[in-house]
Amino acid sequence: MKETDILEKALSEAKKLVEKNKFNKFPDVIKINIDTLIGKIDSNKSLLSALVTSLVKKITTPGQDIRLHRTDFENGYSARSLDTKITAPFFKQHFPKYANKESAFLTLATREKIPWTKSEWQNLKIRDKNVKTSFIEVFDVVEKGKVKPKDCLQYIFAKLFVLSKQQYAIFDETIEAVNFDEIVNLTTVIRMLEAHFETKLSSRLPVIAIYTAYQELIKEVKRYSKKVLRPLNVHTSSDKHGFGDVEVWNNNNTPYEMVEIKHNIAIDRNLIFDIAKKSEKTTIERYYILTTYKNSFLSKEEEDYINKFILKLYKDSGLEIIANGIIPSLKYYLRFIEDYKGFLLAYTGNLIIDAKNSTEIKDFHIEKWKELLQEHKI
Image 1 (cartoon, rainbow, N blue to C red):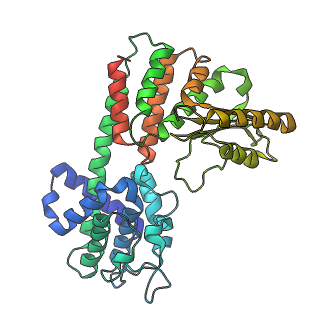
Image 2 (tube, rainbow, N blue to C red):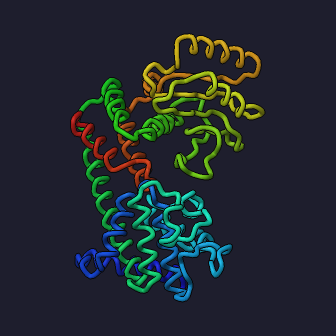
Image 3 (spheres, one colour):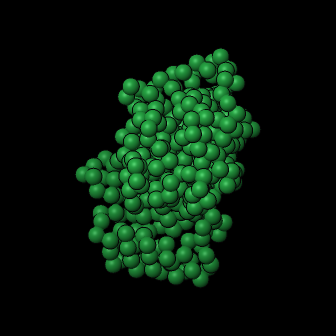
């Protein structure tokens, strides 16, 4: 059986087990340790993918010691190649939120030349001791023949399937919470966004808000006629464009306007210098640097210096850098938008799209937004 077929079959069996609620068929050593990994999947998704890759290898090649995940180990194999070719595409198709961009074997926890054995486990670069222990324990019991690798696969997919169903239910409830009976004004929209940005681990939220505003500006403002708003990239993506968090490009595939967004970081001259340097010899005409930091700048003196530098740079090169706070910028952008309800619906949709495809948007971010929609009867 081919590797992809093994994964598809395990997923199919896992769904049946969920429907019949037959989690008790699995031994405790599987449930306890895999539950630990699933519980911390947002920050350790590479470990779960690496485990899945290893389990597939054990099924196709029972004689292979899957703890030896590199070819430069004696009797080892290339787990990274298998992961890139088979596991990563499978996760992108079925569990995109927990998929790695290229391979699970690009992180410090998985790529180092350390065998996944109990004698070497302390050397693994995994911060959470419980996660590290559970990761090694699964490899140990599989390699010693105490549990079947296909059972581990089925349990992993069953838990991921349940987790995904719970998240999708929250998404549906949030969309349903968008009610268009009430009149929405700019003050209400800004108040809602400010409250949402105050949620913990919220650095992605302002990016989505600005991106949503640009989706509307592209349609409404003449400056952006015949311009292209590029899709949002995941913050942790290895193929990030290299300019801004939000990017507007010309039709001839050259950069036009960029927005870089900082969360609770004061704007200082070094950030401005970096923007000026990476914009050299490009077609970028305008570059925004926006922050959620309360006063925007490190100090009044720093703000004055930056404004003088920006003015001189514009005179010398034509590059316009605009440094500002997120909220003042959103207020400015939204004045060009006639349909505030449409903006809120688009922001809700973008939140959900991001939550489905990465771990940056957490369930509690969606829940908080749903509460805000209900609170303001939007």
